[in-house]
Length: 379
Image 1 (tube, rainbow, N blue to C red):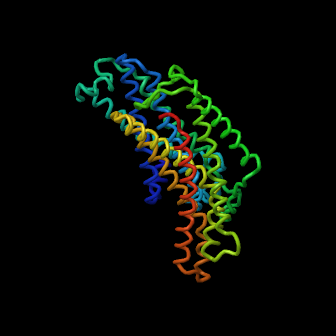
Image 2: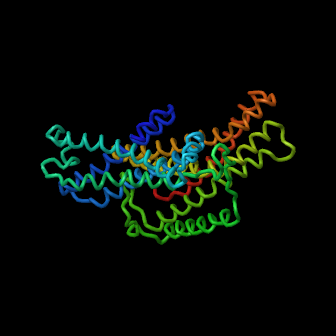
Image 3: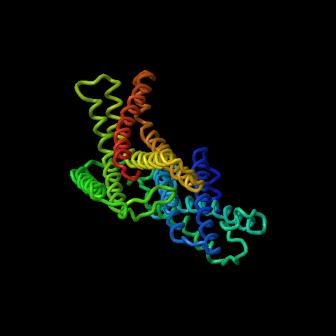
């Protein structure tokens, strides 16, 4: 009943977040149930199909974490009221996690209902292997599989919530992480190790026999050294995305800048720690999608429908996470924008600063994404 009462106060963005979370959960549940149906019919490759469900599951958990982290900034009055009523930080985290888990559970329940209806001699012979038709369905199997999604999403949401340490009605300024020397130096060794593994896998005396790792989605086989090396380089470039955004902001504000460059540079520098992770994930996902498209275009192979569905889900979760983080930052900077408006700042100046920040951030993402795509030796 509490969540029903809470939903009555939802705004359009809250409903959109719940619908997106439930829809993504429904798609992941369909992938899990397909793997179960294939396992019931004994077609083989059961572990591979379950592992293939991990990227969409991780994407949904990532979106749930980003969306949950934005709740205190989007609803400060709700957090203030709960705190004044005696709810501590743990209780608030449980409430946010419960909202996320409930949305995923509803999406999974709808998928399970459709799965059971199709198994009742409704689906055609083309879907029979995916549904496990003709084989008794153990009750515990779909329940155990579908319980994983709300649990993972709920735990991710609970761990991601950050509450301001302040008295009710007096929200504190959110703490801004700083780039320490350790955080800036960590990607360097990862990049070197990744480049070394790639060079080892691409050495002149390397043979095709070393390509023992079969990739899904019709991608060619590769060697473990190449794949691990590329993963390290992608991780290093992702960790450097935030510092590069901050550096781009500082470069915009160099040498007595005009108000346009000053606002754009200071704004990008302040937002870089919060925007770095979502933009890095989006860039890595887009680069991986381009790698697959490049391979399919070269070989002329048909794109598997399942790969398209999973890729679209992961990309949609990454885009939605960036949109949620941008909306969160806009809410946090609303007082500063209001102060600039009271000072008589022209609207065109704010729009120009926003456009300049977007161009600078896009340039950084083109550099990191281009390097990620260039260093991929899989095709």
